[in-house]
Image 1 (cartoon, rainbow, N blue to C red):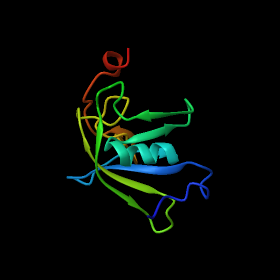
Image 2 (cartoon, helix red, strand yellow; image 1 turned 90 degrees about the vertical axis):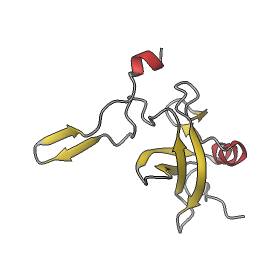
Image 3 (tube, rainbow, N blue to C red; image 1 turned 180 degrees about the vertical axis):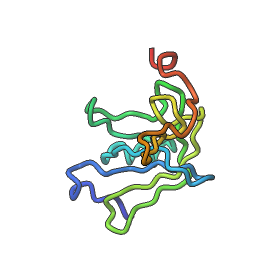
Amino acid sequence: MLRPDFKKCGGLVPAIAQDHATGEVLMLAYMNEESYDKTLETGDVHYYSRSRNTLWRKGGTSGHVQKVKAVMLDCDADTILVKVEQLGGAACHEGYRSCFFREITDEGECICCPKVFDPKEVYK
């Protein structure tokens, strides 16, 4: 079976989470072999945290879980696209539906969507 080329990428492969119904890009994180296998095994998206140096299940703390609908690899097998059902309404730890909530315009930065939750309430 085709797998991501973890060796080519130093053990971590970029993983894009995309809403399966709308096509909206929700976030970008990284997967190692363990998180990739766990994602396929459980149907919940797992990532590898570079800052904490550990595996994490998306929504493990917040409840904003990502359910796998499809897993796709790019032509070089060095980027993963995970089409997900985003439960709880938000993918971003700052409380927005998508991590891509800032738009850069000629006038500067614009917050282009409302917050779904207050991070201070969720991450106590």
